[in-house]
Image (cartoon, rainbow, N blue to C red; front, side, top):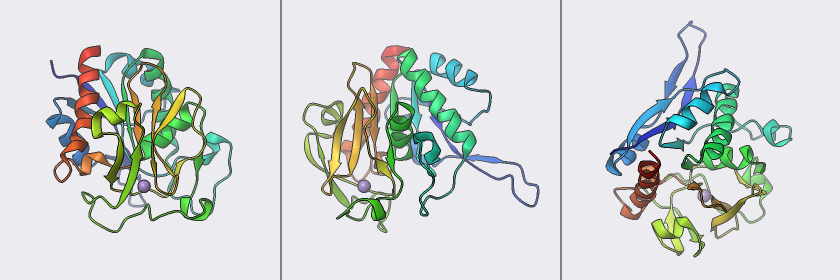
Amino acid sequence: MRPLVGVTCSSSGPNETGESKRYTLPHDYIHALARAGGDAVILPATCDDGESAVRLAGTLGGILLSGGADLDPRHFGEDPHPCVGHIDPERDAFELALVRAAIQAGTPILAICRGIQVLNVAMGGTLYQDIASQVNGAIKHKQDAPRYHASHKVVVERHSKLAGMVGAGEVSVNSFHHQAVREVAPGFFVSARATDGVIEGIESAHDLFVVGVQWHPECMTCAHPAMLEIFEAFVAEAAARR
Ligand code: MN
């Protein structure tokens, strides 16, 4: 049975010419899930106070939180740093509700880039709003190389689910973020760090499959086949649940 996996997405507009709001998602997420044996449905943000998030979390085999714009820092009690970018309040509210509902329902979560940040904040953690100005000695986390290219190393914690997918110790990853997990949410632990100490992976300390990575494994599955194992492990959990 191929499990049904919900994938969150970005939106744009409505714009000045009256064009309707559009929902967008890079193909790489769908392709990686399909290769791993999962069927994807795209989840547009709704504004119904979290009711649809609860229904979706209880229906789907798994939830993939995709990358995108910055999370509004008010969700972790801060005013915006000057480097904070575009904010999508509807997406923020929907994804935060979706994370809490999925964890409540025991639905597996794979959280990528913005996703790991949403996951952490939804469960009570905080973020660096801008790595370059808030982390001393930070390396370059916004690479100019192609998306499939690994630009920096992370060290993966031996006793983590992530180590079972990509291996423990040094792993090379791509990097397209200017924010990162700061204080890890209660009930979670760090599964990977960059060489400058920036957190690049978190997981639930409980038996649930709730795995977040700061890089974009969906862009690396051809050049770095181990990255597909992240999707295979997630899809296997989603299939076991439904
Ligand atoms: Mn990075």
